[in-house]
Length: 176
Image (cartoon, rainbow, N blue to C red; front, top):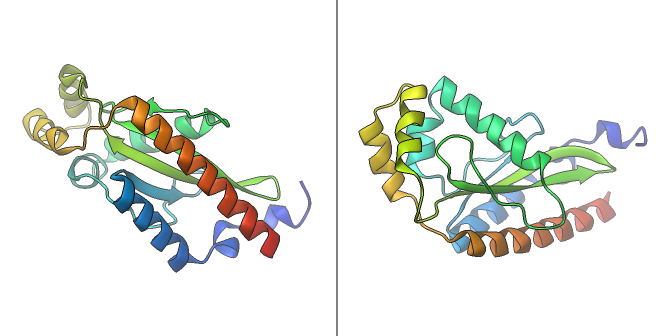
């Protein structure tokens, strides 16, 4: 890693308004939620297309947010050139992500997800609600609102997302 790359931040390479617009367009077109975070899980963009389950119920709780960050870090840790799709550590929604690199340094994570398989385990959700201090009935109702997407389709979407993200990163690295 060179001295220059150790100082690069995501916001040095990508214009905030442009990346937010692309993230919003991607989420609107595909029906998945999306956010870009720093390597520690702190948001760099506004959430796009987040579900009520995640934005209004789970993430506002301390335990829920902590588990979301752990889940996001775990999915980035398993990313490769092949589609990696994993259920979140909380209620089992599908998620995936792409690490963003500049000069060999991990500067951000682009995360997608918040869709469910039609066979999601309701008992897991009830246990999770209790663990983070939420009403299981309300969490169950919000889970029913989450879009259904077969894992095979989500995997294909993730592969497309990975290719687009890598092309975008390469384009911006040539500029600097």
